[in-house]
Length: 390
Ligand SMILES: *Cc1c(COP(=O)(O)O)cnc(C)c1O
Image (cartoon, rainbow, N blue to C red; front, side):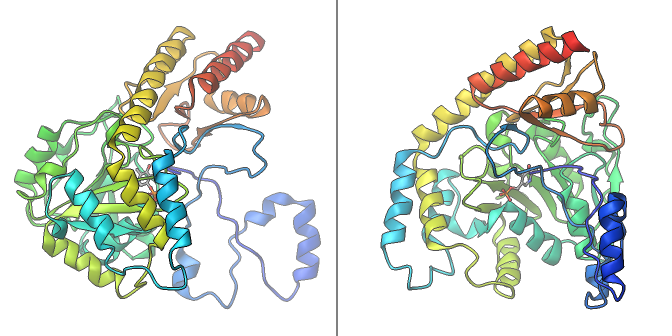
């Protein structure tokens, strides 16, 4: 789902000598990754460097600890709401204003409904923010190690990006961020580091940075960080972005949202209504609404993730891993008995998928999603084997 994949982008080759090349490509696989372009791609398309999500094998053979999904399925109440939506008038368009879903989210955060924007996954919400709220004539600021979709969107929308290095222990210090910028975006907790900063630190930054939009991507906030949702009334340039994909077990539904001042929300609506009037279908609207009303299912599922995360962190430390203090539903850890890449490959061979980033500063770490207690026990078992076989 996230972060710093630097696998080469695959470009289909379309050209006159394609038969010859096709043969050649099968012999020398590395050529598949050449940057050859189609003449039917415009310049914008040629410049893109698409995001590469974590592996999603469709054969279900793996224990999947690589894309930060929630191991608990949606509750029966949420499923029932979606079934009812299927039975109720799919021949008609959904509400383009998504009023009822916005109302549930607003109620949950005790905010006016005018403070809520919803989109097709928080990735889409982020895309609209890049397109419509960041100043394209100045540099956007984000950490050097963060969600790797930020550089992808910056390129898509022609925004120059200034990446500010995290500290030696991957800590985020907003105190060093310059306020002359075209916008600021960071994730709290950060991905893939799993570390969170306090709301006070963000508030101190907002006191200084008043002239550009500040986006706090809270995809993982429910697993142990303080949300900035309560600050949106006080800071007209603050946008808090969240998703139902992680803590609400609905990655398959594609619903995300932003909380902010009505001016910012209205700007996002302008972009959305210039792009797609109905980005959320009726099933998604019903499921997400039910998820916000199902406070008990939500609490149970997220407390379980936190419990299993803490237990797994302790076990990995005992195995000699350096484990960062996670506030998320994943663990960022460095093995010492083998390289991170070797552990990633060894685990994959043993049927366990984790995320490995061949990227500067983090190539000796693995990002491991918190699965069920049983899946984490299997992971530890496989790691003990790898360590023994070393
Ligand atoms: C998963 C993730 C998202 C995207 O969430 P969707 O709502 O599934 O699009 C956004 N930001 C971060 C940091 C994430 O990890």
